[in-house]
Image 1 (spheres, rainbow, N blue to C red):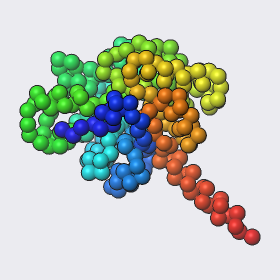
Image 2: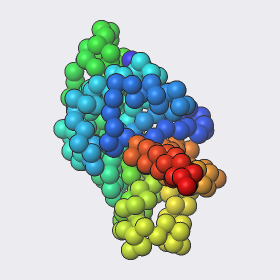
Image 3: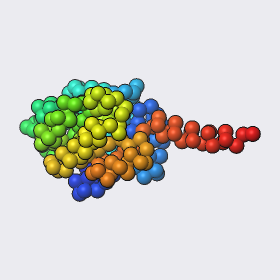
Image 4: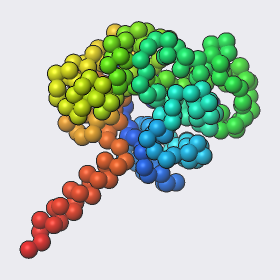
Length: 258
């Protein structure tokens, strides 16, 4: 099975970069991301119309481009996790994780017995349709799969230390929009409560030897979060990237019109 180079490099303390996809899919997308220097991509199925079939195709294309694909499932259910891992996801991003017990259950969904409850099928997409030892594939799968929890509620923030103490949780991802709403300061990302939350997530990750992840909607955010210990950086997302680039170009050209 292919190695999750993102997981390996993050474990060595490196900082890696990617983006998020909510709207646009094409056969060329993973190669475009690779050519832009991305290490990984998150596909969001919670807020998009993406199907499992869409994801299976994208994961296969990522393999050819050298991009590591992660996915946010439509919801926190075993059926979503199992299918998305079987069609080739290298890890999952779970929304609104709020307790250690919940985190433990999510990890169990991603692991085969005796460590978990994941149902077994081999010789399919997730192991590149190859033969080989079932026992070795189970070990390889556990080694490469990442469990990433979104901290985007007040309760999740309060319980972050116990969540990140769970064996098998690899990273905590800042969910800045939902977290600001949960803290009662919607969209006020500079509010002291939000700034304290941002630091609490990265500090807890450092304490427990986990990775702090985030979506940075612009360069300034990205630089600031990197200074504060975040090492898995999604630079913007597909809609934001297209809107920002197109509007900047059009507005500049419009300024030249007499």
